[in-house]
Amino acid sequence: SLCVTDSCVWCFSCVLFFTESFEVLGPADPVVAVAGEDVVLPCYLKPNISAVDLSVEWFRVQTKDPLVHLYQDHEDRNENQIPSYRRRTSLFPEELRNGNTSLKVKNLRGSDNGEYKCLVHYTISVSVAVGTQPVISIEGYKEGGISLVCESKGWYPQPQVVWMDSEGHSLPAGHTETHTDSMDLFILRRRVIVQETEINRFTCRVLQEDLNEIKETMTEIPGELHIFSINKGGVVVRWCGGFSWCLLYSRYKQLDGGTA
Image (tube, rainbow, N blue to C red; front, side, top):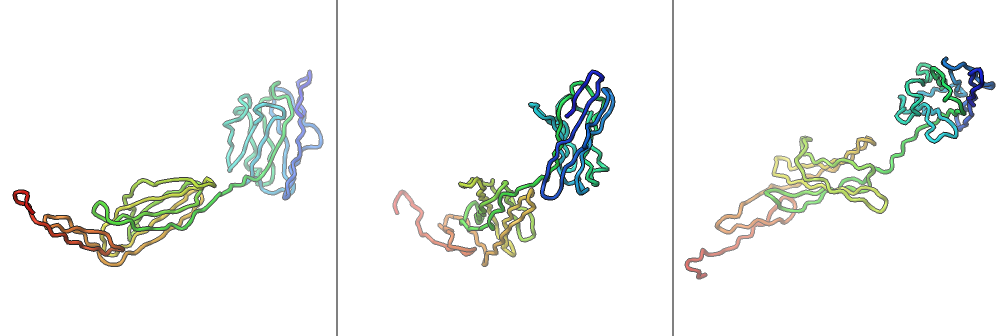
């Protein structure tokens, strides 16, 4: 504990934390310092493994907002630090690789009186889910081309859905429809209108950058794409499947005077 006396002397002891792979240790005797001076609160790992990739948290005991200093993800993160400690605390970056997680406190104040704890632990990121392989369906003729829809399920966090041509160029597509299932995992659907190309090969890619995961499905539609505009002769184009089309010719006569 850190305590103040009439002669403005502080005492500190480090609480020990144990994990399966290392111990967090402090001094056997109190650390004594004088008000206005700097003090180092010793804390180190046994064995002396590197703490560079670990999280180091110094905090006050029995305090509403206890954070004194936080090192996490290879940097200091003191946004929620007790205001009175701003710009007064630091670790020893060059010593972290040696298991030294001691804290330096500058210009000791009377308000620093109290009990402190040093916590060193692993930060574990949990990736909830990587979704299914995308499924491509052909919806039919629409807006002068073929409407394709790509669907993938079971993602978290939400990924991106991208349509690409045979050369890997991104295609302009509709907005991505998103829903969640009973497990709060994302279901995604995205449509694209494609025109005839020499290869007629298209790819739907689902990309989750945070997880560095990519899943993609390619579809190659055989045959040629024949699109005929409806003209005065009554040629009607309907979708039959793949890139083949059924042409239905409807005969009609131009009405003169309203008589068929």
